[in-house]
Length: 299
Image 1 (cartoon, rainbow, N blue to C red):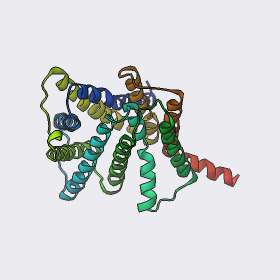
Image 2: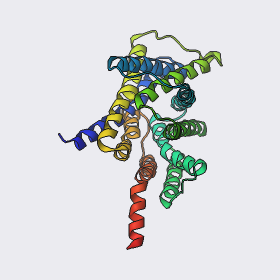
Image 3: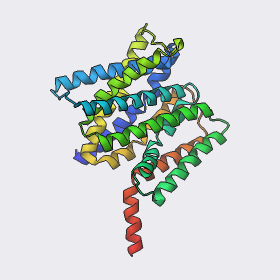
Image 4: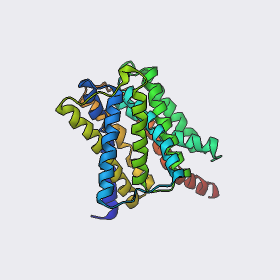
């Protein structure tokens, strides 16, 4: 098996694994856990398992105070993003929420243009138009279980994740495993603090096998394993190719939503999902498309 083929397989597996978020979350909701408890246990177990993984392979845990301050900020963003995403599953179909979340590369492009004066090309503008068109199609579909509040939660989640990516790329130069471990640690603390804000948000105990199993499932499959496979895939085939294959994340979530939880799927919803994914893929291959446009102008 070639390294290219191995990288593609790892990227596909990573994307599919991440797309299983709704499977664990919705089952835990059915078991009676509130949103705060679901995300808290997901990241708590993920931190423990990732720390054990790093300890076993003798990876360094050292960070400077400045790096720790940035990681604390990133963890807060990560916590807000997770709470908003999992809360949105209560107000709209989980597959649609996962698809809309996938617009975060567009938010990254917008943030880079506003704060770092990165020029917005015709590809970026077209991607933004397509993403808004896709969301509009969802609202125009009578079969889509979607609300304005649910959409707002997903967009806040996507924006927080976009800021997370921008901050890492601009201000943090440490290993991805170390970044993930500390940001998830501070994410867990953020969720714990948030749980004390209202009585109905308090962390609930895990009372049965299903609660334990799917909490550990969320920590392992869409979190730890997805991350490790993605990091390896990027090493083998590059971030652009891995990001394009990441389109399988929301498609997996849609598949689980439709076939496991009976969520609706119509031609208009399929068209909306395709439009949103196309807008993101355009952003991911933006550099390649811009080079082609420059070459055509020269010709």
